[in-house]
Image 1: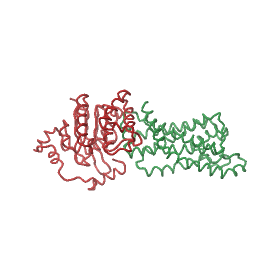
Image 2: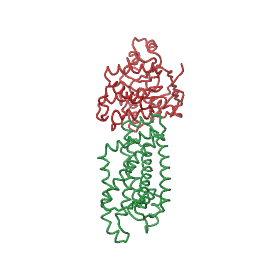
Image 3: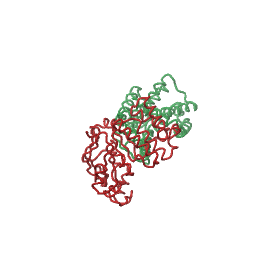
Image 4: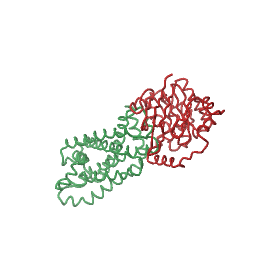
Amino acid sequence: MKAVYIMWLRQLKRYWRSRGRMLGALGQPLLFFVALGFGLGPIYEKAGEGNYIQFLAPGIMAMTILFTSMFNGMEVIWDRQFGFLKETLVAPVPRFHIMLGRTLGGATVAVVQGLIVFAITLIFGFNPSWIYSLVALLFMFMIACAFTAAGISIASKLEDMQSFPIIMNFIVAPIFFLSGALFPLDNISPSLRALINFNPLTYGVDGIRGSLTLSSHINIFLDFGVIFGFMLILFLIGTYMFSKAEA
Amino acid sequence: MKSIIEIKNLTKKFKDFTAVDDISFDVKKGEIFAFLGPNGAGKTTTIRMLTTLLRPDSGKVFINGFDAAEQMHEVRKSFGIVFQDPSLDNELTAFENLEFHGILYNVLKDLRRERIEQLLKFVGLHERKNNFVKTFSGGMKRRLEIARGLIHHPKILFLDEPTLGLDPQTRSHLWQYIKKLNEEEQMTVFFTTHYIEEADKTANKIAIIDNGKIIANGTSEELKKQTKTNSLEKAFLEFTGSEIREQAGTAKDRAKLQGRMWGAR
């Protein structure tokens, strides 16, 4: 299990050493937060739904985690390009451990990014309930693990840097927009609702929102079950894909 | 003596280009084995198949008695490798790269630290050990890769053009070190090089590959005798012809380059 630790530590070191770049990556979610939060806030309130900042903040945290997690796959492609992937692939370490270390490392980075966004939303007036904050953290971590594993799975099959961001946009954008991160799920058309119900991130967003604002659309245990199951499945797929990777 | 590497009818194709074409040979335990051939002959592709990085299209590889396509974990436990092209993490320091390797290969802490210190001195990078690898020159990176490959002492050590771009002093040091490991620990060494005199001086057995086929296999003396030449270099030229291989000259090479661009290196 030492291999898991050293893989994890490596990701954190790389994160810390490129913290300027990582802070830059927070620009997009914060823009969403400020523009939508303050732009749509008044209408949201007029419609009788309450404080939009309060509703939106957990969604933006989930967004940050989703994007950061998926982009962990980029690290695999970097490693392939710079040859370092070979070093890990020939090592006498079960692929499961390599995958676990990479996933935990990437997920930790994504959660830290999510927490930074959380801290900033507090400055902008987000007022969470703290009682279940550890539950929220658990949800954040599960989302991060699930989508990091997804990013690694995709990257294991890709050779070049150019196609990864394009594929990511195709997958990540719909997952984000159809997750209930930006709008409430009551009174939306049944077909849209069906799409949203099909999206695993919906349950993650709802779980974070439920535990931080004590209001949610879905039962928290269902949220937990879905995101936990999704995480396990993606982790297994990732391990399989990674074990087939060539360098 | 028994064979520690057994290769049987190994073939690998990239699209319509056959990089390795039905090769078979053995390497005995404790041998220093030189694998020679012109550019693009199939050396690195063969090594990638021997080290589980690439799946063969057909044929079998046994490393230390384990099937390289089935018992990959056991195979990986049996060897160490110094790659031809860079495989360091540029965002880590020299020390961190070595430490990472040592932990992956489960070298215990005291021994690991001791060997890292010793090897960093050996390759002349001790003063730079806390510098990021991205600040290193090509030669320094090369030396660090070699140091990394020697932290754990495997049963089989693969060296893919280890001395490329090194000065004569470092090269001579390196071969002394490797010979010592070979004698003291019965470590089998499998290496490729373009410096034919290195193979002549160091290797017990030599195989020559060209166009994906093994065209000669034996001791230096045997190869010289077969070609009626008085140096291994001349024997090598006799076997492979003196025509210069361009990396991307012929259609075949272009196919190979394309394969490389699409990741099928």
